[in-house]
Image (tube, rainbow, N blue to C red):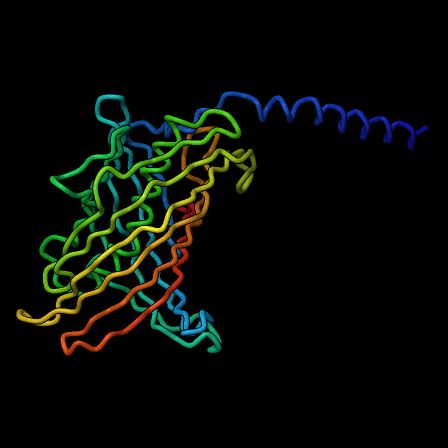
Length: 300
């Protein structure tokens, strides 16, 4: 009798799941961030850069990470979404060969610890003149190479924020798709580091692919597919010389959004870069890398 009762219990649970889950998938979802002024989230950006050899095989590895707090300052149709970012820690890894054991050494960039800046997201991606300026502060008055490392590492998080905000406004059912068009090239400069960088970002295709969970939190999963985008860069060498680079960038990946509060719960973006560098002596260098960015909440 006990076995029969258990079999009926399992059967009923299976039937209930089959009747409820499809309905949940068909429900209208709200992926927009629902934060209110004063709400804070703690995140970690883990970044892994793999250099490829001429045959496309992994040759070198470098790992960086950024720990930061994201404080909600405003969230309304008029202001859009405004966060204050506080950098808790920024560590830069040393390049190492793929066959080396361990994580490799890292150094903490003390000069950026405690740095704060604001980021804003609106339904219409803002531009300044002929550029989309990510407005990450080391671009102004910061002369160290770590400024380039920080901007290069944090930029995927800024792009994810734009995509997340767009998804909240445009995706409401599993299977929905939306195209996010970058209105102007992404561009910035860093004094005595990067004279100019211009990325002509092509449109991203977003798709709400399904429902899942992350660390026990119900989530919606959104896939990201980016087209191959050309870029060019002039790197500072001396006041009268520079390195010139051009190449392509392509980003793909996915992110998970909490169905409870619209927070970003996890994201993974893979960027493939192919670059040709012309040195001041006219020597040409080619470089191929795969950069993986993973974003996840961290404990307070």
